[in-house]
Amino acid sequence: MTEAAAGSDLVKLMTWLSPAFPVGAFTYSHGLEWAVEDGTVRDRDGLAAWIGDVVRHGAGRSDAVLLARAHRAAAGGRAAELAETAELAFALQPSRERRLEAGAQGKAFVGAIEATWGAPTLTALAAAVKPTPVAYAVAVGVAAADHGLALPAVAEAFLAAFVANLVSAAVRAVPLGQTDGQRVVRDLAPVVAAVAAEALAADPDDVGGAALRADIASMKHETQYTRLFRS
Figure (cartoon, rainbow, N blue to C red):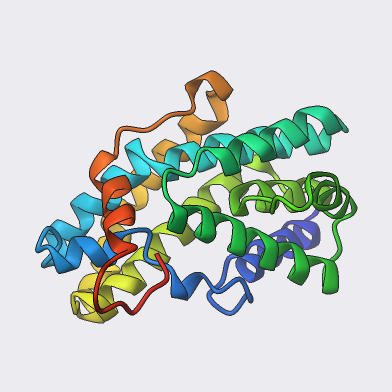
């Protein structure tokens, strides 16, 4: 890969996973808003513990495994495996709001990519599984494969963006200072790298989670009286 090509790949990842990319990520807290409401997350240490567990044992890890499988299936032209991965990723969402989070962001990502960068395999997948939306993690993996982006970088960047979005939500909901928020991002960087590497070596049978409080929080959030976020 040439230096220019590597730079172009980095720009794509930074663009697709930036807060400015129109998927509406800022409107979702992944159940974190309820954890703030019930007092579980009140400060920097509590936030780092909560997000770290979600990345290690919950949706962070599972999404990275599914992203990796989708990337490989798309790169290899295995349409049936890709459709199966998309179906599994959406079916695994444990609550109504988490289905909304994964599906709405995925649908928005597909639309934004189609209108700008283009990704033929992703477009074909969205048509094949319609009316079920393509889950966000799968959509990112397929688009990255269409553009020849290296899977290790894509998985780590996806998880880093996931962490950054939850930290951003906490800055508004706890409230938490911007500096403490960035310290959480910094402290979780090794976790992001380790889970991304683990996901690359995993297979679909390894998908699963044990972040039960996060799943329950997303269910509790559905009836939370005052809400800033959609999940």
